[in-house]
Each structure stands twice: as C-alpha cells, then as structure tokens.
Image (cartoon, rainbow, N blue to C red):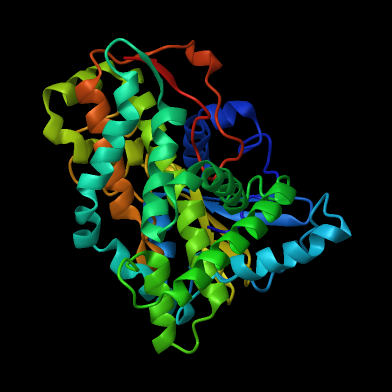
Length: 423
C-alpha cells in the first residue's frame, strides 16, 4: 500500500476522508463518487491522486503489468516529516532504509524474489497445519469471557490473536506479545498513508526498536543454524540467504516488518468489523448460528461488506489515459477497494450483508502479483474467531451505545478501537 496515496486532503465537497463521519461510514461517499463519474482528481497543496472506484477499473489496474508500486521517484516534493529533531534523523534513515525494502513497495524482479522467500510459510497446506494451534489460541482467549460475561471483541480477541500467531510464525517469544503489539500498531500506522506523516515520530521510534529487536533474533538464529527447533520464518529466510547472495539482512528484516505490521492490523479489523456487521444484521447472525458451516462464506462477505483495507494505489512509468483523463507519468492512481466491493455492476444488492453470497469476487486482498500473501491465514483466523464466538456465546449483543463506538484514525486501514459485547 502506498504511503503517499492519502497525503493530500481531498475535496471537502465530495471526498473528504478527514471527516469523522467518513471514518464512521465511508460508503455514502463512495456512492456519491459512483454517481458523479468513473474517475476523480483529488488535490490539495502539492499533492494529488486520481481515484478509481469501479470494480472493473480497480481490477484492471491491479493486473496491469505496467502499474508500479515503486515510489522512488515522485513528481512533486514531499514535505519534511514533522517533529523530527536531529537526534531522530539517524533512526529515521535506518527505518526508511528497511521499509524501502518491503516487498509491498517493490516491483519485479525484486518483488518476485522477496515474495518467494516467504511463500512456503503461507501455502494452503502450511496454513491449514496451523488450524489446531489457532483454534487453541481462540479457545484460550474466549474462555474467560463466555457464559453471561462481557467481552471487548477488539482488545480481548481480535488484537491478541493475530499477534500471537505472527510471533509463533517468526519464532518470537509469546511473552513479548504486548511489546510486539505496540510496535506493530505503530508500523501499521506508517503503512496507512492517510495518517503516516502525522504519526511519523512514534512510527520511526517503533520501527527502529523492532528492527534492532529482530536483528538480535536474526543473529541468534545464525548462531544456532541447523540445530533442531529452527523451523520458524526468520530461520527459513536466513537459510535462504545462504543460497542467495543478493538477499540482504535489511530485506529479511523488512519482510519480517511487513508480516508484523500488515499481518496483525488487517486481521484485527476483519474480526472486529465482522462482529459489528453481524450485530447490525441480527438475521444474518441468527443464520450463522443455525448454519455454522457457512462461516467461510461469511468471512468472504464480511471482507467485501466492510473491508479492513479500504484502498491501495499504483503509478505508471509513462502517461496513460483513463476514462478520457490524461494521467501523467508517476502520478498516483488511487484504487478504492471498499468502493469496488460495493459496485452494483458486480454485486447484487451490494449494501446488504448476505453471508451466503455466491461468486463473491471482492478485492479486499488486492489482485494480481501483489495479492495479499497472508490472505489464507487471515481467512482462517477470521473463520475460527467468528465461528467460535458465535457458537459459544449464549447471546451476542452490543454492550455500549453504538454512537459511542470509535474508529481507528486514518482511512486506508479501517477498524474499531473497541467493541464491547455481552455474551
């Protein structure tokens, strides 16, 4: 996801994602965009991007081999990061050096090489092998909060579950969960370009701290390479480095950063957004209770209905034309995934939550070569968390006034800060 897409503050009369009302519910704005034309230029100050919202257009750009995620060259200057004193510049530079190597911002052939590093950890077979452990974690997290109790779905289920899974994947101590979660939160903010610049100070500090933390674990793996018990993702990447002289430590650390930053926030939001959608649609909640086998389809529909990732972006190395508008070379093209997922040209009654929706071609995980590497793992965690909660909670009701619910800052990553329920 580009960190530059949302730096502009868009037109207030049509697409102002800085408004609290937009964060609460962006979908009326998407409908307004749909009704006013297929493409929109969003501009303020030195920044601008072209917004696409139709499903066909979003998929076409995502699959276009000319479309690039590389932001090495920008057509307009980016302002200096606010609030960084000279003492922060060195860790800032180190953090950016690592983040620049994240496969999310790399085109082939580098992207292909880096993705191959971690592909084996996310194959369907490997993900399915994690099912018993993830189910055990879900059971452990839910146990104190069932049978007439209260549960904050976000804080006590949706947040700890993915970070525990990621810690195990990377071979990091579960005891470090709280610190890993704090670092991952800041990394996720840095990946959300709509707020990255405002939160750059904490993000840089956390990125620097987690890089040093991971570097220490990487060195520990080197010292015990080949010994039993070295089967985690960090060890696998280190072993790959031995046969690939071009693979640097920074690239290994960047890949681990991506797994942490993108892997936990999106799954947290999937679970939180999903429970809220079920609470707002009691007939569908009852349907899932009656038909627990529907849970896989339910997760796909929740991903479509209220996507944890609302947008991504691309640039083109040469000028192109889209819907009669000339897009200059390397201008940002914003792809509104959340809007595409409610395109009536693709989805019947797109504003309705339908847990059994057939042929659900949502784009919440992207499309093409940058399709979310952890999609299968996120789906499994969502299925086990939602399925277990619905099956085991004698009742499931919102334990707060809905008007008091708060959404995380930013726009590109969409999720609640808290969701208290009665069980």
